[in-house]
Length: 202
Image (cartoon, rainbow, N blue to C red; front, top):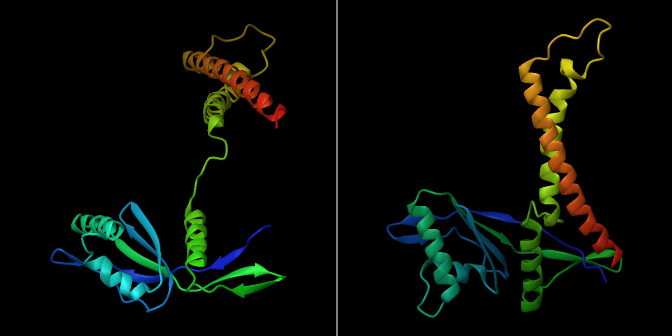
């Protein structure tokens, strides 16, 4: 069964540093999902009470391992002058019976569902076929060398009279194009031989 969810991130604001303590922006006392972006790091979580959690995250106790880790990431990013922000989700809907139905985010399992969907929706540039990367790179390299060659005098029809001496730069371009094309053919044989084998066993 296909599950379709709908939700929107709300920007709560920037996290600031007061001395060595992180100050989190005010958020409603509601259940929901949170996202902390600290420089190049992003942390996700869910809570029954977002406001209470932000208080705890600003000053986590010794047994609150996750909050201590997030607090450390935030304070390190702020100390380094990196932008650090908080976003939240306080409502979500799922598609059922031909209509959108609100989800009860007071339920732990539904908050976890929205959190997982939120994390998945922010993942970008995932290569659906990582094994094809060398094939695609060699194809791009061959194309990059062949296109300049195609427009050179070497590719023009030979004149009826004695042809002129080839330009040294164009000869070097032909050599590079030949090497790139040979590499592409070899990579094509490697990749597609494996690809056909995989698809034949699906």
